[in-house]
Length: 99
Image 1 (tube, one colour):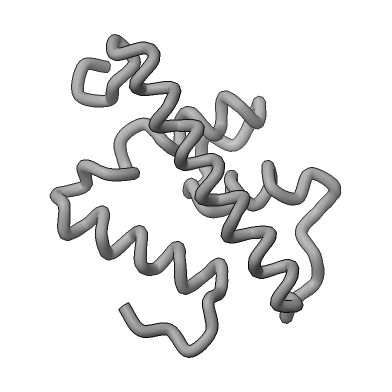
Image 2 (tube, one colour):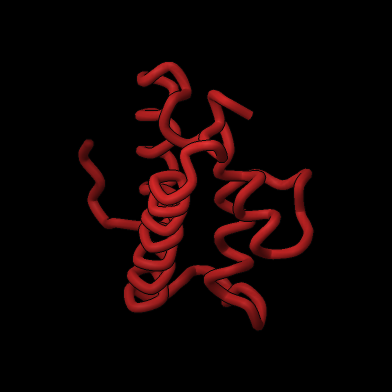
């Protein structure tokens, strides 16, 4: 993927494309529900909005974001995805294909 500037939206677009190419095996099944449970609400929201709410608990900064804010958001998103995969690895019965 080429992106002139790494942004939260560019990373989300890449992840969504990868997820579709993998037959929706990467993120679609379970991540949104896990994020909503972690947040305590938002089961009707997409994963990238839920992630923003967890990354910026005091409210999302006004756009356009500074490069530092973009980096914080990207690191937060990747951290949440890592945490989700760790959760799945530690509790196999929670895997989406068995839910």
